Image (cartoon, rainbow over all chains, first blue to last red; front, side, top):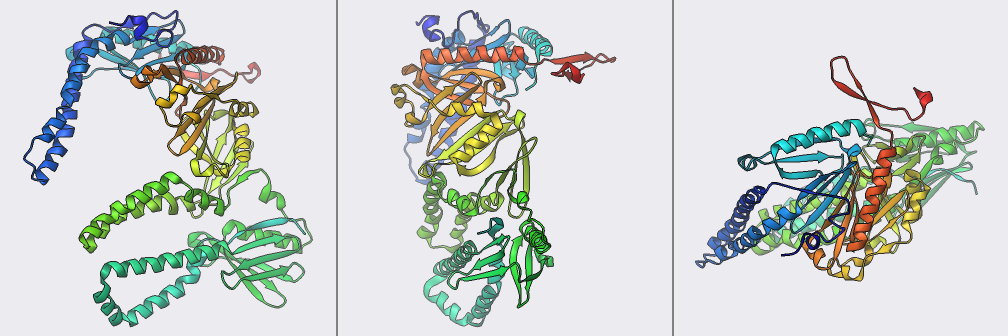
Amino acid sequence: MPTDQELLQGELFAPRGTDFVRCPARAVPYWRINMIIGNCWLGAFIAVPTWLIAILWQDSTWWWMALSAVVVPLGVWRWFREKTEWRITGYYLGPEQLWVRGGLGDRSLSVAAYGRIQNCDVSSTFWSRKFNLATVRVNTGARSYLSIQSIDPDEAARIRDLLADVALKKGVQL
Amino acid sequence: MSDTIVSGRLHPITPVRRTWLFITSLAWIAYGQREGIADLHDTIGYGWMSAIAAALVALMAAMGAVAWLKTSFRLTADQLDFQSGLTHRVHRCFPMDQIRTVDVSRPVWARFIGVASVKVSTQAENQTIGYLSRRDAERICENVQRILHGEMPDTAKSGEGVLARVDSRMLALSMLLNAQMMITLSVTLPLALWPYLASEEVWSLALVLPWLRSVWKATGKKFPAQHGWTVHETEAGFQTRRGLFNKTEHTWQKNRISSVTLHQPVLWRSRDWVQVKAATVGYAESTVLPVGSRCQAEKLMAGLLGVESLKVLDNLNPVPRRARWCTPFRKACGYTETDLFVAGWRGLFLRQEITVAGTGRVLAVETSQGWWQRRHRLADVNLLLPGGPDVEIVHRDLDEAAMIADRMRGRVLDQTLQANPIRRIRLSSGARTAVRLPADPKES
């Protein structure tokens, strides 16, 4: 198993002086359930049109089913990689900046100064509530958001209040 | 030779006005020969008849367009020139000392579509020049009357503050040289016609309608919307004026621009034409100049972001050679950076884009890396801007990307801390509101 330093490619995703907080371990089964639901949708998305084509061609073979079964090995691979994603995903509330890291295949590290924060909100879905998790979404006025995903709801509320307060004190014009 | 005071072409509606008699005559003849047409239909079928009719209409439209391109007017201090005709060329010249009166005429239907004609009365004859846009007609009339009264023509009005002007020919050519659009339309036409060719059922030609809609959206709809595009310099910043039928103006405030994007499709490169787009909060990436020379684009950019911004257009830092495994357009990618500005160069399919932004406008810094980039030790750095497009520094070496991101984070933080904070005041009810601190204490 690669070390954290190897996983995060050194300075690129783990700059010096940062100490990222990981999300709770129960986020892993939550992501796995999300992944299964997503893969079921993907399988259906492939199966329905291919099945219709097979009917139109009066093809009695089961090639369409084999095609849609591609999602199974994909899901198995993803199932075992969720733990790696958990090791990468995290946030760091620095003295002047908010740092958010995440992703498995496509990794990202987003950093915004507190003075640039416009608003932040907390949200939770049906499944995330079952796992007692919530997401904080921070808007800086740019097209994309900074998302602190799958954290404890109390922690999410604390971060929201903290960011709202610090943005109020340090906020600058866009 | 005197300087030109007003010049241009007639309004594009003119060929339509001139050909209505011809089209009506054709329709009348077709009605008279309806039995012959019915026989023709039995012989060749609806498909070919529709194709012939479409070709005739296209031919007439093309002839009208060419005739319109060959028609122009020009007013100088000495004379008013008018040239017209496609096969039979006519050049009318009205010396100023021969002109008695000049009037603007606007019939009801011309008022409805916003055009006018100019009636020039000389000692020998009365001549009508039409149809012109209302503004051109009024300027001709006003300036001729000034000259006749011995006053100086109002040349300042026509040229003052105009930074760039896009003529119709350049605009039409730039649309035709859009390779992406041409390829899309060329590929989709056989697909649209395939059902008809396979079934020979006339109703299946209805599938061509979406294709015609795409053609219209890409050319016919865009051309009148962007016709007569001018960029004026005002006290606030820049003002763009455009439109053939619907006139639209938009003002760009200099201190509100978050980024400027220079866009160059592949077929424009030989002419070095550039499209300039700018972004402000709530008005992301709108066109400032649909097509113009590199010099005009740089002039606009210097006006919008400051002269310093031009420095980022030189000394491109190329991406590493191994980036060729991640993008086929490696040579078009790169980035440049100065103390105040940063530019991201991206080569996309059949076009190149350079996005320039002041580092003071950057809201957040994002480092990203896909799994394929990870295999080649590459990463992207995105600088997020308010509402508009982001500056994307793509396919950099891993260590270099880390350094760029670190430098940008520091710079953005410094500028955020140095910026004037928004002062909040507490209202009596307990609610808080924001008040901008004035930069100068005297203002308060």
